[in-house]
Image (cartoon, rainbow, N blue to C red; front, side):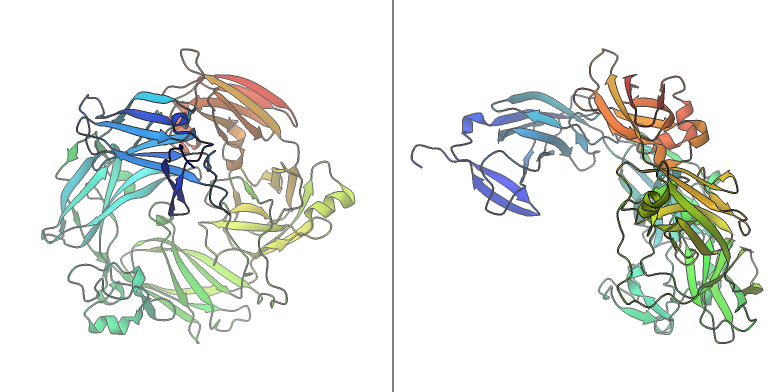
Length: 632
């Protein structure tokens, strides 16, 4: 079109880049701009060559029209700072955006963030707006260096060294691996680009791959290291056998009789006695040296019998650590019972274990939705894919479980007899919906008890609720369980778990503990009348606290009922709203808080008196005025 200027805007959609002209509907003089400076935190030193990313939060643009068939288009623009740390985004279409800065050796920074765990606030650009004088401060990262030796004082090469940080997952304070490196031939390691904070450093020598129940080794799970007969050129999908590996000189703990436990800095195998390393911005913690020593790898052997006292050939056995599951990933070994009913695990490290034996099948559609929490009940109000029509029913399932302690000697003569396990009957009802109406809402719901730690092998058989709300769960073994209510797609919106009781004891706060066959029924009541909370948050200057994290923490008797914690973010007006199950709560508004920290009772103690109590009634709405808790 004559007399109309064209402007090209880069548009990113599903990983592809579209270059589209701005038409008459979007004149260049309507476009906005963003400019500012990036400096090193705590100084005025500019950071040159910092990458700035301006990303649309709308999922669309007002103009130009997207290509035919394209309904959502994101605007992503990037620039790099000059030698004075300055940046400018020109010709930005109006909308909502987020601005992020990245630079090697510095923690990622975002415009409007108020703490290290925040991703930055969204901000709106109006037509013709010129947003100026933005200052982004970037915190330098830190390093940890050291040397690892073996028990002979020699440099230990190819040792995996990891930096862990405590995080909150499902209400538990657990260690999460941030970075992993291998020591070189001098035993040296360097953990770098670490954000400031406390770290737990662990070391464990590289282990040879372990064969599965079929006797084969999946090389994709094996750490391929320099000098190893198995190199990076090996097809990661390739499987082999322990015999083939032995021909290459690669043998595991089952053959050497020696294995390793994770060692925590400054040199302990007990996490409780480890020493955290506190990193300051830009600091280098040096000489974090410690020693790795092998421990005797032993055998665990025994025999599995069926209910008739005969060898349970083909049964499945699982040896599962009781300790490592919450810290470094669930460590478990699987095996199959031989024709004469015997089993053997080789190369087992000292520790406390659960041994679970099973025979028969679980349904193909069994799942662990939302597991990993310390208490509460899962309620899924949509339907999972069930078994395909005409699918054969699962074979009858029998189970057995025992706990064993492994030390420096072989553990032999374990005897387990498979049986049907414990069973528990129950009834599920919808509060205020009785008779045929309530039965219609609960019919077809699946009740599942999820073991902790969560493993399919130790899971009981789920139960489908009958027409009168009744169900029976079978195949329980001693342990701790979480209640999951699945396929509840017919319940009204806003339905929640009001209570779960077994033998007049709360079964969801914290969790259901089974030590013997339950005598009573598992009584589940679903509520349908949630309340609503609307909070307005202001800072010390009585200004709206945009981006504040509003958290409603349930009262002490329900503290471990995980799904009662409610979290919402304040908008630009400082308002946050959420639906809430009826009951008593303490409401907090934090400027910056680590995700999930509100689960930690020790954390909440620090903010005693800074929250506001609130009672939520069924179907009611409560308005709250909260004061912002500043970042510490």
